[in-house]
Image (cartoon, rainbow, N blue to C red; front, side, top):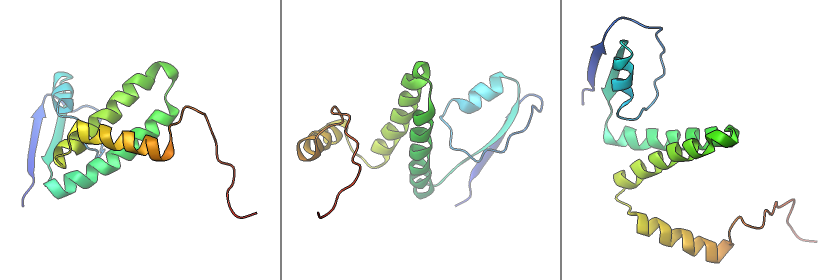
Length: 121
């Protein structure tokens, strides 16, 4: 399958080679800044793998976010989760049910517990 490539926009800006998966409106935002860009549409299998990588990337960004930016970082994380749910045809209710099951089995994070060690005495 040949990837679709497009080059749109105005003058050349500082070129950044990211190779990163981006939200649908990012090319439009770059174009509005009168810069050029190049994108490709990737195959479904590659997209699933790329979203898995993006999920980890967004979660890592959340760990270092300032308090004032945390809601935005969590929204970015949710965006990736929502995309994965669409690709894998998982509805929100299924995820919520799984979350409730895990809470019953393992508990929540409300106790602020840190496991220091485990094993036989």
